[in-house]
Image: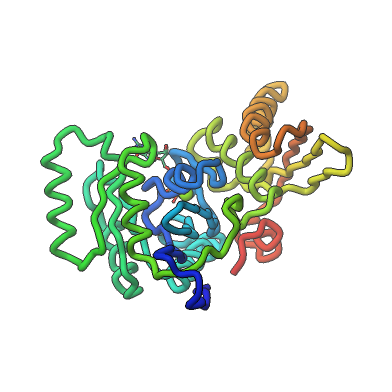
Length: 307
Ligand SMILES: Nc1nc2c(ncn2[C@@H]2O[C@H](COP(=O)(O)OP(=O)(O)OP(=O)(O)O)[C@@H](O)[C@H]2O)c(=O)[nH]1
Ligand SMILES: [Mg+2]
């Protein structure tokens, strides 16, 4: 992934690839969206929201960052989860710099130690981002956490921040750019992500499902855009299939008299519209039961969740 950087046109501009690594729910995708300035990654309060690596491109006068958001590190059970973890390893291997993000408002657990080891073993320069400081009542707790981590590793920087509130995200951005090699921009300043519209749309729909349903459905639900039709000027027709594993789960998504799926569609349209430059959108959602899609190579390939 590293680019060969020409010796010309170097005026202190820096560029490179940066992996965002952490446990599920740490706030990685929230940070990605905030830095990119558009919603390109699904965010939810349910763990394991992100399922594959998503690149966000951040261009500033001082440099260009390709920030690779990754699935939260967890113990893989299904084939889906194994592929999610390969995305983490692949991202770690391909970048110039790692940002290890953790939720600083909860106590340190085995999962945190596991992620830390992963980052240490990668031998990449690393910045520690301590997120959700808006939830920390006693600042002494935060200072203790900083001390704890400072002794354990030679961090490029330790940055306490709040991705949701936007607090100190610019400080993190500055530290990231400082630690990238000098080099030219690889992408145009208007490019925001490597993900095509059909994937962004599917992820928005999935986010709305996570938002409107309970604890069990997130893990058994996937969304794929089956039609993305721009043939009519000013109008985009989108059909998304929502996969679940059982008939009972389909009933939950559809809801009484179709109320819930309608709500999901309305919420998704609201987030899709800003990505379409004033075009209108017809969004059609339908639910498909596909038993065991989480263990199916074919289904996962169709969903873009690759080996
Ligand atoms: N209070 C608070 N909540 C936050 C902050 N950053 C993120 N969150 C919330 O934390 C939850 C998880 O955020 P995500 O961005 O989806 O977390 P993630 O690390 O991408 O999670 P996975 O994709 O599952 O690995 C969401 O409910 C966010 O709104 C923060 O700075 N403060
Ligand atoms: Mg995420």
